[in-house]
Image (cartoon, rainbow, N blue to C red; front, side, top):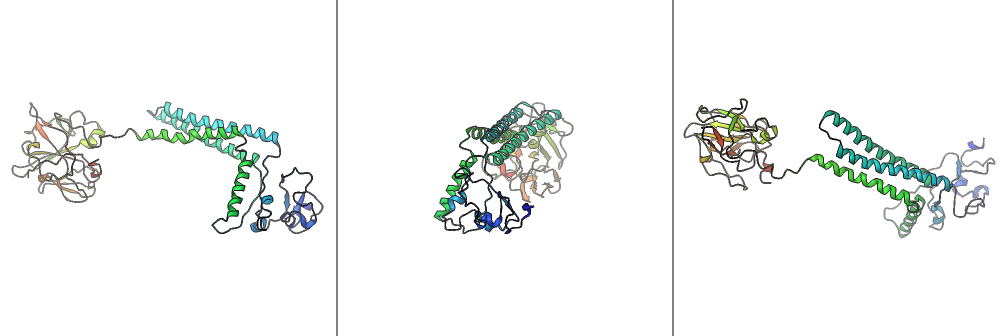
Length: 393
Ligand code: FES
């Protein structure tokens, strides 16, 4: 069969087929009609031709001009119109339909996100299905539309280019501009406004949809990171029993108990910052000094005198290094130890840091007693609790 000709062999008579040497020389090697003189083709409209045999290296197949630019225009020419305008019109409608449905899928994604709650497992399943399905459909239809557009409306031309110096010459820049304009024309992007507009409309929801996901990050924290639920008058409830405690009941020097604010003991979010260690000391053990300046760097390294009751001191239980519970207490040395990275705080001196990576003393909670003798907070912490990177936000 003539189809099996080897590269360089003469063609066996099938006039529509060229061997590679003939293809590269425009058919001159076998005396074919010269390029541009084919009577059956419309002027300026080069149809892709069937080529027989193993292709030579890419360098030999380049369509770029090798004669200093004289033939560049002819070599780079792309057909501006598809071969079959009626078929192209059909494909155009299909592509536009794909883009429009893709855009609607993007809108559906946003509607599903706003309307399907996630309060239960079933709702989460429904939400995932609706969001995943609508987003998958959006990308699928965009892809199908793009593939149909490229395969059926843009010309099929093989082009190769040798490596060349990185800096483009003026001629190359002009050639690029020309190629770009030809490509833009051949892509029909300008000429077919329905495709262009439907594609733009489809991509708008795609760009906006991720913004909706920002809602999942929750409301802005405001000043909530700097404060706890402790306020004046809240009783100190013993963690575990939930009972208030009097100074008289807590009378074993060296003892430490965990307490939380009245009404918040079951609230994990509140307790994550409001947990407090209550420590009883012997008379004369505490070293008193002024409180830290609110809003300024923590300089407190003494116990604030009027924030204690009968040698009972309340310190935040949240380590100022990275927020672990600093709950180990060595009563003979009065050291509070954080087990995470061994930060150590001296309880008799305002819980100042004496070892480890923490840089700030444990905040002290001002306490007093109410009319019934129960321990209460006489105010909030006067500095942020927890890790130091929030401390002066
Ligand atoms: S979190 Fe306490 S020492 Fe690191």
